Image (cartoon, rainbow, N blue to C red):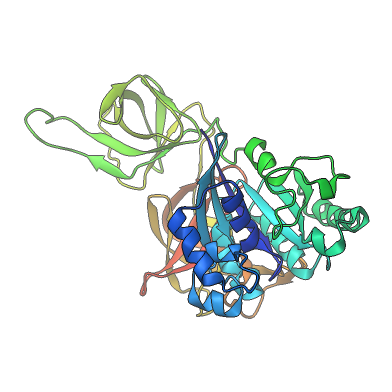
Length: 413
């Protein structure tokens, strides 16, 4: 059974947390003790349940009635498993949304039927475009507050189509719903009988997961070099990691990057068993025919696959996540999978206004939640793919050398 990773985003009070709560509640994915806890915490005069409490776990969120941090929830149906990230709506929490969206296959952008497309709708759509999220659902929520009016829905669809076109969002689905009352969540609502498409959950169960990793590019980022050096395994040298993009077969010719040395796969192990073939997503151990100097962070790729980029100069989009501003020339660590290399931000080329996508050339200051295009210089060559080619081998983080805090998410170009 496959897994759909999706994120919800939208304006404050558009009903993101309520929508997730409704999905969990109506699909019977809430434990009895959880249900009792939110019944007790709801404190509603009519005795109804505040489903938003299923995701708004922080005390500050409950007091303010908003989501200020990422909340992850897991649920499943007979057809598919789901991992949901509930992202904050406020502009000052852009970094939280970027974190949640970085692994998403799909984004649900909620729009309040009363107010239509807003500035934050555009901002979240721009972030979805920058992060190359392949599937977008525009969920027009609170249809009950506009009397389930078809024209209100159509006006929002028409306006959003202009945004989607300008950002190149190709796979957009529009669904009218009312999360509070459950209309069009699990099954199609009679009060929305003019809508002929699927309800939200059936759509999520059948939507195609458009792969964001090129399947013709096999990569193994070496996590660990296994050398038992016992009598039984005196000559054993295995390279452990997760296969990305494509699988490996015994006898495949491979290149080790960044050194460029070549060899052939001698054996493959999965779960401590020898196999002839391993597939993408599996944790594997490779042995090579030749004795090559390989260490953690090196990448083993198929000779026939298109090689990764190997360079000491990298262009990237950064979402700045630190309270301290970005300063060119400061020392950082750039981490991509198991690769960790010393780096500096050499130049800040431009800053992107995430509300308008306008570029500010050579900005004076880069602060928390800013998105900027930079050139990074690394001390040793970095092996990577562009993020558009592969999210797995094109998404990195920047770490402050002194505090070990993650200061930026990096989308490698």
